[in-house]
Length: 313
Image 1 (spheres, rainbow, N blue to C red):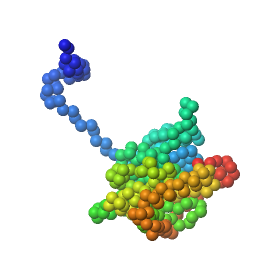
Image 2: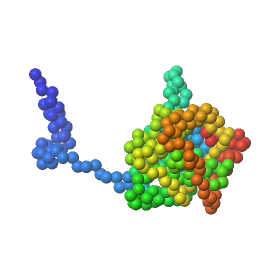
Image 3: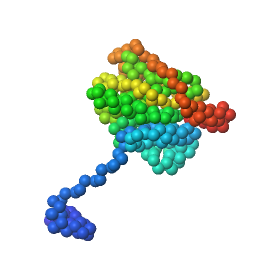
């Protein structure tokens, strides 16, 4: 009977001889394979953004990353939920962005597309990230100048002191309704990250974002409490500011009230017995942005929406 293993070995040597590698050369090399070259600019920070139908504002979010003067190598990952407003086409044309498209609405071949949770959606990007740190940012936000550098320096300095830092919360405000910037304390007075840094290995250790318990809201708070429970700290990052464009009339926000109530109940059932409700609320700081970033970036969008000539959702 013909030995199939011999056939495989014979085919292998035929292949390598065709590439100039005889038996003697392979024997001299000991069959060893030289390691692949090490990337000189491997990402330290992975920006991860989830997006859906925000073509009007997403380019400003991306540009705020590009112009923020980040001092370490970074990558940008955007998970798009199957936008129909030209966002996908725009993203694909951006050669410095890793684009993941996960269709989350509509029909395909006569069947309704399965809706996935925010946790499932974002974990696609978190797990693909190659940076030591993940910077989570919404698709309707812009970073203020030097925010990333200030946030990262602060986290690294605390790590150098021996502290286990799972995340660094950036201060943000909802423009134009709010004046002060703030970070938030969730159940038990534990700090959480709305926008800011996470240690990727800590995210992996606690099982990433919960994909099953929450539909859209509270999964970020849940992630932070899992980190606290695992012995990590979430800290604030002084000087790291984010502007969040908040339009209360936006259809997506108006339609999500029922989902928010449902996810709040799920969050309470999961954590109230562990941490209680004491100490919750914002920690505010006053800051006057000399660049007037929010006004400069968001005003035209607000005017377009007021005139009925555009949408940011």
